[in-house]
Length: 438
Image (cartoon, rainbow, N blue to C red; front, side, top):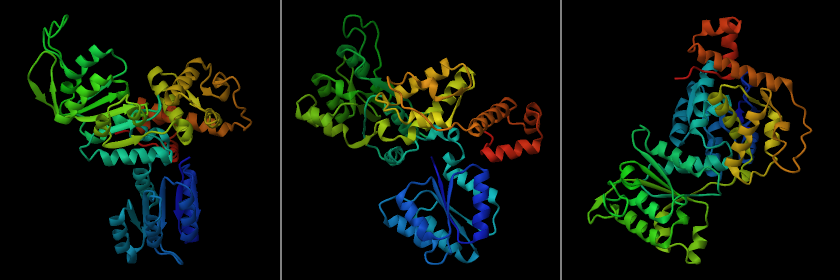
């Protein structure tokens, strides 16, 4: 679960902030001194840090500098500053802090800043399209992809079947092409026999072989000026490996049946679930091709090694089902805990199938652990009590969002439809962190 770290030595302000965060349902660890906060920050990961600057023993500035010197990257940070420490706050921004807010301040303004730097604290559905996961491992993968997006190098993504390698490639594509105007072309190299794969990759001219009734553009041409994703690169034959190596080295493609070569300007992303280094040692994969495609390596760990992502992903899958089918489904917190006990050897693909099956077969809106009884021959027992409050709040938030969307975010109409006052609707929206979709 994503948590907030608050460091404030003023008892009244700390209590006020903690109470508001509780009302907003933001899990928060509150500290009255920076030394205790530092110990906690070094021990666990936080979604964000809010810290006063002027504190006894250890200041907020010293706290941040110690975090920078440690092995852990500081979380997104907002500093609370008085008039006399504004210069310090500006210096901290230069070191990587996200923002600062001056005393006295409106808590809503602080929440607005917090929402920008750590949207996951306000509900998972708000930021799933820009996130790969909530676990430390996937946040590291996301940070690496963000850095690589700014460098024109080929990228190799590895990981077990079903971990989401193509999803990561599409995320990287969105970071490379923020306008969304450049093509993204994906090809599974294991899905085609060698002769068809050659045509799909390199194009062919009309009459190049029997059945070539017209010219065809291959994926290198289709993805020109965009991004080409070649999945299952480890399944290529030695002949295709040699032809691919020459193509990506020279950055030109030669159509089958043509003597002319055409240059292409394409960002290349490769993926495989195979151990290419082992294949090289066994003579099954060309060493020169391996070095060429492995200019930048991103590894996605299996789901069983990042259990924090299981509940988050399940929540996204349920939301996708609800939007697609128009049938409301709610996932109980106890169900999320149950899902974390399963090994998920098929990774995200297996999880998605299980959750979608539960959504389809469930006779009720609320999905409990019993809906996943077929996950294994000996499903783990769940003895934790299901809190009605949790289920009701999930349902209420979903109902509010759907009603607001239906009435195009017109507050008066939405409140009237729900049978509540506009003030009550505003209060509920603030409580659940609901904001109008732009």
